Image 1 (tube, rainbow, N blue to C red):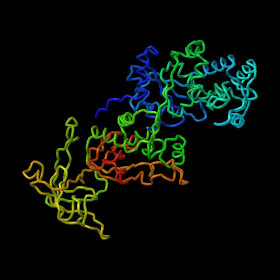
Image 2: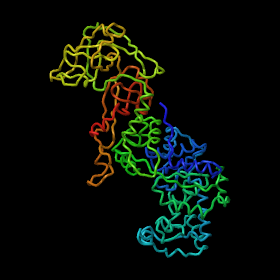
Image 3: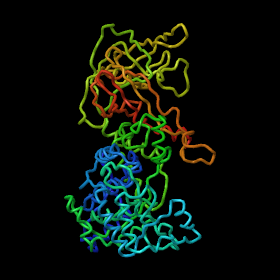
Image 4: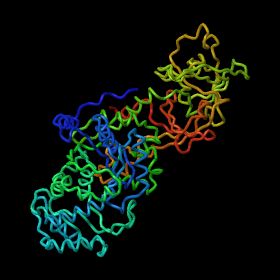
Length: 576
């Protein structure tokens, strides 16, 4: 399977125009800047594919930068998980950076803003700041500390840096315009006091920069040319540009002495922020807070639960990285927010796996079938293709004896119109083995069917004259004498409504959890699947695509997760 040609979008058009004009000397430098406060989800994959894809397609490079400016919420566990997810998705960064690499630069930039009369130390608490800020229809009011002298502000800011004041006692705020129509420009905080250990810098810093301030300076230090952000940052772009204008990093290389001393490359440029619509999917939630709650309240089995929309969950579910890349490529890039059907992603998964997954037979709802007219000690090996569309996959031997397992759903005792599988007195083809007729139905004392006794038409066996005789139904099977027992986990969508976040009816996303999203059954599989490697993916014929669980699967105790059904059952169930 090959991925389609990347379509043009408005961001690519901007990059093409910049290269044509010689802007940045034709260089393209992007970055993927996650905050390490949780696991990446499918929405993040859109940004990963965009940033790394733009850099790749235009001969540039892309950095992985951890925007770690909020130490209370961040953890080294998330840093390692993000690195693994990006690589699994198929990308490699030019350099790994942390916003915390630049803490000294942020501090020196704060000093510069104070000296230029563009920042001041404010003693208002959080509630007072909100009161002074004003509303969308009313201008804000200047802080009573706004006119402190440069000397006093420098002294206070240096004492903040020294850890002299309590958490929340003071902030450093940019001095812009309290009457601005954009509330983000009403003297925003750029540093706050927070005496919390940091996952990268330890206890070295009692003050931390705010995201809007740190992000643009980080971009400038790294020489980012195109800073690609989601639409919620569009109203923040004036502040992004204001900070870059005031600090003017390319004209002040002395501000980056600590970066050079640390052995990090330093190529200051004036980056351009460009916003695009984030990736939204139905039948899921993307809020890190809500995903965290699902994990902490044990409503799912951890961040890598195959029902979770995290990338680690999608990987354990068996979604190929290529399918996720294909999905976001087809979804496209625009400035229009929209919700994409989860079925589109599942369709991409099927498309990729159809070309890459070897075939095997498995029975997940077993019913015993005995062939009466074969000797009880009969045993043979049938020759099956590993993939019906690609000879490169080769062939395999499949054991066959008079004792088989078939799907219970492939038999009906009472005839039903349109049912073309096995019924008393009727014939079906056993996949690759021959045509059988049901002669007898065996039941237990409770009236439950426990065995079918059938005959096989010897002339319909492989290589015989009647092998091509037509019958309406074909069913799959496994050899009961050699099949392996396995745990099979049937996963489905975590939520049972398209918009779990819709609380208009007084319900929350928790009320919409799909109670049928995980079912564990015991199945019979072709014997060689015991040797399947963890994360290997297979099509179980007529049943769907399945993956050997990356954590729990062993040859002694095989465990397979259903990746996706062969067809979209949700659309059919909804009557679409």
